[in-house]
Amino acid sequence: MGIHHSRARIRVHTHAQLTTTWLIPETPGFPRMTSSQMDAIHAELFREVARVYAETKTLPEETLCALSFMFPGNAIVMALSLVEKRHVTYLRAPSGRGAYQVTGSTGTPYVCLASSGYCGCHSYRFGVLRRGTHAMCKHVMAVRLAEAMGLVEMRDVTDSALTDVIRHV
Ligand SMILES: [Zn+2]
Image (cartoon, rainbow, N blue to C red; front, side, top):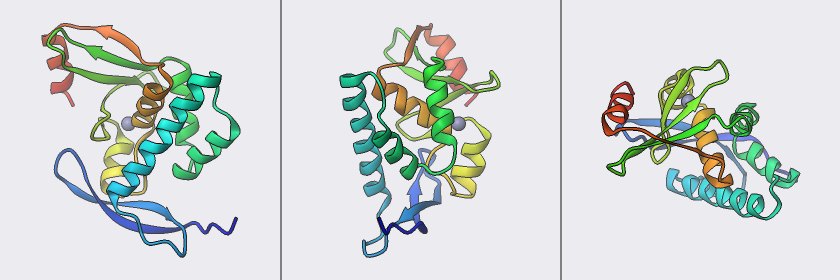
C-alpha cells in the first residue's frame, strides 16, 4: 500500500470561531489537505456508509477499514457501538429547531451540534479543540454514522425543553 502515517497539521475553524490545529494522516506525494477538503472527504465517506448500509443493512469490512483509516484509534468502534445501542437521539421541537443528544457509554447525555462538530464532552474540549489530536469525538462520529445509517431515535420535546438543553451546552 505504501501509505505512510505521518501527520500534517492543518487549521480548522469551529462553530465558536475558535481556531485550532487538527492532526490528520498524510500520504506522501500528495499535497496537504485543507480543512474543507477534509470535510469533503469525511462527507464522502459518510455518504458511502449511507449508500452501503441502505443496500446491505450492514457495514462491510472495506467500509470499516476506510472509517478506521480516517479516524485512527478506537473512537470509531465506540461510536458504532453507541449507534447499535440506539444511543443517538434527535430532540425535535415544534419550532423546527433541534439538537442531537448522545448517551455516552457511562450513561451521561451529551449535546452534539453535528453541523459544527461541537460536543459537550471532555474529549471534544481536550482532544479536538485543545490538542487537535482528533478530527471529531466519538459522540459526533456516532451522530454522523447514525444519520448515514438512518438509526437516529427521534424524540419530540417542547421549545423550552430544547432551549434548556442547549443552554447547558
Ligand atoms: Zn463528544
